[in-house]
Each structure stands twice: as structure tokens, then as C-alpha cells.
Amino acid sequence: MAAWVPLESNPEVMTKFLHKLGVPDQWSITDVYGLEPDLLAVIPRPVLAVILLYPESVKTEIQSKEDEETKSKDNGTDRPDGVYHMKQIISNACGTIALIHSVANNTEEIHLKDGFLKSFLDDSKDLSFAERGELLIKTQGIIDTHKESAQEGQTEAPEEDSPVYYHFVAFIRKNDKLYELDGRKPAPVDHGPTTRETLLEDSVRVCKEYMARDPSEMRFTVVALAASY
Image 1 (cartoon, helix red, strand yellow):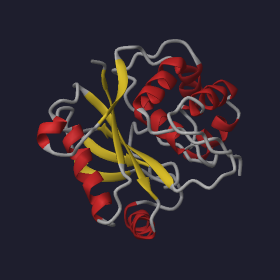
Image 2 (spheres, helix red, strand yellow):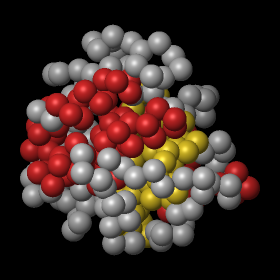
Image 3 (cartoon, helix red, strand yellow):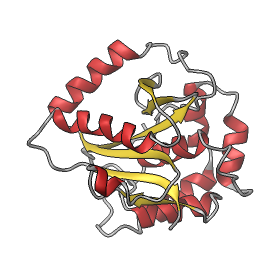
């Protein structure tokens, strides 16, 4: 399996990465500093997507596999209407795939500039879950931008083949449902109803469920794709 240097869960790095790919400046990635209502209230609105970075602890991995078995089909074809979902074929690419999932499912609000991401989404819109993942391997513009961004974090970037013990998933709203999108799961996970106004709070509810699987683990990070300050 091809491997990339992982992207750091750093809002500044992730925002710069998206802007390089053609996301307009009025949208950016912002930290979610806490999951209580008063801290969620300071996040700029609208929030279009939420991204969770979680450690791949044994408890979390077991529960994630159970979720996949109970909520997802194993053939990759159970894709709800209008949901853009792609397979992670490249090791350590989960951060970039979570960002692509976040943008691709909000193109009615995010008016992409001409660039690598717009071209990729245009070329992949009619492809299957797996075919989209295969196309990413061949999309040099996104690959090069990822490599640049992976070197810009606050921590020293690991080698491409170094083991990474964290994983990104994205939460988006489509057809007034909250979907969890994970390139390692063959279908979106339906977490029930949501609205444009409550996407952040509804996503946080699921993030808390992840955290509850291993209460001793503190290494979770939540960020949001939202209107810029």
C-alpha cells in the first residue's frame, strides 16, 4: 500500500491546505476547544463539517469494527443519495480524505475555485467508492499539496512508512441526516437526523461516544469546517 506522511490535526495547516486546493477564504478549519455548550457556542457558523481525530486504541478499534458490521454493507455500494464517499487506499491519507469528504459534501455552499480539488471532484463524481480512492493515487496536484502541508505542522513529520496510531473521520449533513464518513469503512454510517443549525452539536454527540469507549484515553482532537472569523 502506498503511504503518505500524515497530516497534522492543526487548523492552520489544514486551512492552508484547503485554500491551496481551491477552497475560498471564507471557509476555514477551526479548533473545537471543548464539547460543552458554552464552548461550542463560540464556533463560527455555519458549521459544514466536523472532523474527529482519535487514537486507534484496542477498545475503539473493536467498537469501530462492530459499528461497521452493524451499520454498513460490505460491498461499498450502500451509498445514500448525494453522499460523496471515497475509499482510503493510501496509508496515512485519512486526514486529507476527511477534508475531501467535508468539502465534497458541501459544494452547494463552498464554491470551489478552479484547481486540483475541483478537478478531482468533477472527475470522480460518477465513480464508485473504490474508484475514487484509486483516482486519488493518480492525482499528483493533491499529492504534492498534501506533502507540502504535512511538513508544515508544529511537530516533526514522521517518515512515510512510520506507523501512525491515529485516524481521522468526518461528519457531514446530507438530506438532513448526520453521516460519519471513514475511508476505511465501505459505506457511510447514519447517525440519525440533523439540521444545518445543529450539525456541530449532533456531531459532538457522536464524538463523545467515541471518547466513552476508552475513558482513560485523552488524545482526541475535534475541528470544524466553518465560516472564517
